[in-house]
Image 1 (cartoon, rainbow, N blue to C red):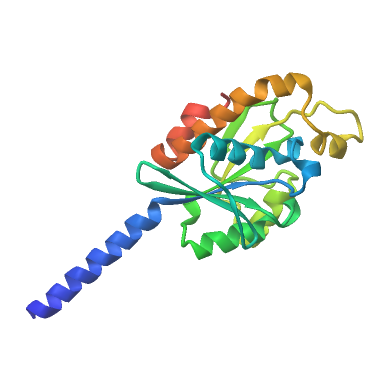
Image 2 (cartoon, rainbow, N blue to C red):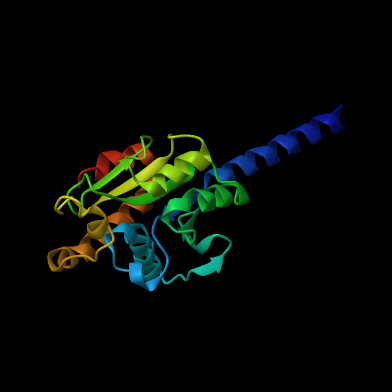
Length: 210
């Protein structure tokens, strides 16, 4: 009987440790398109934010299956930074693969994307919602079979004429935007850190609309 209880206790201890470890892992995904033509475009803000964090923390990306990966350690948390190399329209394939490979719970996923409906630099974190016409989010929704996942929208505004949306989104930042971008990237990095350390609700309260 004692042997049975000991085995039962050890099993539950291991299970608890495994669950706790899993909750300390996060997948932070920046959406974008690969290639030099897209590096400084508005649509690639997800890549740009992750590149900013990597440079600031002196960590390097390495090319792995379906994307470039870097790992950031913050106060006992492990953040897997992912830049899918599938092009925007197939982003969900890479997200699903790395969630499953690293056994990361869906609530610890954060997808970073551009948003035409927000003024430039406005930040908005949401726990669910529609794709809003964004192909990267649409594919993520299709692959994960849910609209309930965390997404961090970075406003790029809608300052374009009729029929010019594609050119605008795939266009490079204007001079005024460039002058403000570094500060916005820093605040974005703070939001991501808060997401991992303080949780999504506290982070939304602190950063939404900031």
